[in-house]
Length: 581
Image 1 (cartoon, rainbow, N blue to C red):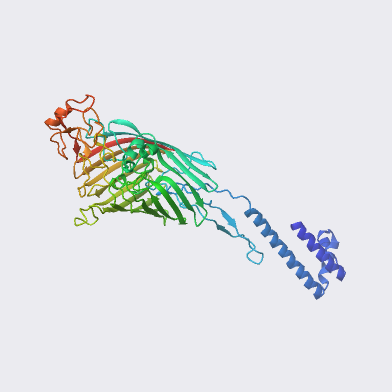
Image 2 (cartoon, rainbow, N blue to C red):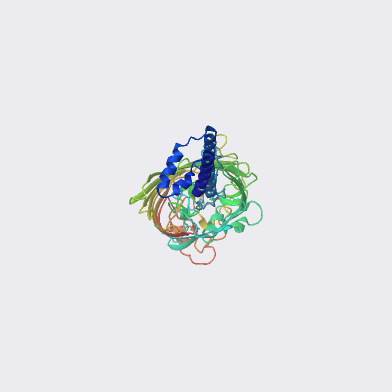
């Protein structure tokens, strides 16, 4: 370009000097010897006519314009080259919510005419993936894996393995623990969950599948009473599935997803998957509220930091509907800053007490998570806390939200939990301290102890061992301390101590919760039916005589008396190994 401009100026000078009879400037500049000085002096003495000078100025301006246009063309060529961007991390699962398919975050050049600022080309960002512009792996209930071990345009696989050893200091003789949706047997190594699946995504169509093998495949369906309503074995149909849905992503706002199937609820903040959580055994607010919903959800992202998610579902952690009404609800998730997460979950309308048509349930669950310290280069590199508060009640058919009256006794749920997390040595170690409390008169959300093989279905007509009558009192609190060793983003070694207390006998005692000789296949009946009373918590002479025949196949003699050994206190340690790819 510089040679071209030199030649152009030379030709212009040639034309001007030809008209006035002078030397050619470009030739004078390249000529050596004495004649050069003379030529330049001669040229300087010449007078250029005004018309020619004006024409010369116009041509000079035209050359400057050509130079500007050339600069703009080169800048546009650079901006239109392919842009390589890093793969955005998965948005927070619902709280996370599951991964969201959205328009990639790229930059689009804006055309600028030569009359505007020609020296630069402006760029504006396109729509950003929801929750992708900050690192959210510090959140409780969110996986801390930053990059997938493998990915493709069509499928992102996911593998989870969760194995635990628990020692209950009550030392139940049958190794059976109740009151938990995460820990089930004492003094044994158990595979809590093995999940294999992942996310499918192509051309705005999406699907997710996660299987569940191990203890979760029998304990999770066991807590759903809805299969008792009608035919077909829903519990068996779904027992090996934790998440399974398909849907479509619409490129509207910052994205809209419509999914149908089984998806995580995240009421209670903690994730169904222990790898994602700060503690292994969550407090009651989380452990006694739903882990999954079966139905339809719509995830609307008005901005990159706001999600509005309506639900139309079968019921409260229900494969089917316990009566005739579906449940409705939804989640609002807002992340105004990279150090703050606010979630509100709400549920209503559903009738979730099996065979009690007309009794409705409402519930609100609200959480805030704050990362109040973040110094990556210091030994104590990060600190954060979470607070969750829940309110709920049932009303109609003999119960009310507001206390004893013509509507019936109070049937409500009030609870909270608070956890604080510390990270050390670039997140190599973690320490969590926390706990919570609930008050649940009527016990409609208290997990039914699995006494004599009881399930939520078989105990629908009420349990003789742990009653759930309207107004039955239940208050409880708990605390825990958790230490994590995390050498890689895909694995966690965990040690935890928990203490839990209830206002009534609830936890498994030394005598266990399994009848002598094993379950008698009639869990709603007393195994030994003379003289036992609800709430008995220790082995008396009658229980001893029943226990004496332990080991005999079949139910014990009906002249004996057996009752489960229930205690008000429970303390245990668990050692866990959790993997997620």
